Length: 258
Image 1 (cartoon, rainbow, N blue to C red):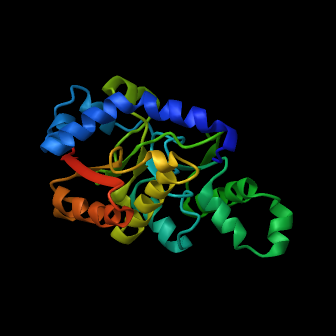
Image 2: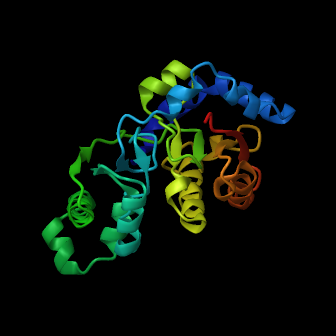
């Protein structure tokens, strides 16, 4: 997703459209009550009922299912296949204007660049090949938002089941969000993906300077009773990433409703 320089008014309009809900989040965070707010949402369980187990990218423009950057195009292939199997993946998507595919495409030899022409084609090819090797379907190529990323929040999900589909977020009264499926990543990979999400939101493909200490990017951690994905452990991981952004990223969290 690439923001045209003439779209600054659209960026500001989208940012302001989410101000009311984020002001409430910031106030609750300052009082130490944001986690309780999420745990008490009437429709919170709906957000943990995936409609499919297809892998797609971490961005808000590829909602639903399970999330990984690319998906998985930057990960060692054998590790990616193990992850797909552990997560009981049912399929893989690619998508338009994928930043991870762009990075991977930039590093292939010139003959492949000539053959594939662009990173979208390369991303589709890679996803199809990975799906075949993992023994699951390639389920399609998703469109992307045409201009910029609109999420002001990321969910760092220890449950592996958080569903950020537009319908479910709307029912719960929540804004669009990135999702990092921490349950299926190791800590290093998940923290890297969370850093990518924050960099997108604070950079030219997101809200840029509109994300600041007074209006920070929110990382919402979902913890589990399992000690490997406990709220305390995952909050520490997310906080270590947030510390790189000089007050422009804040971290809060709550326990999954099961």
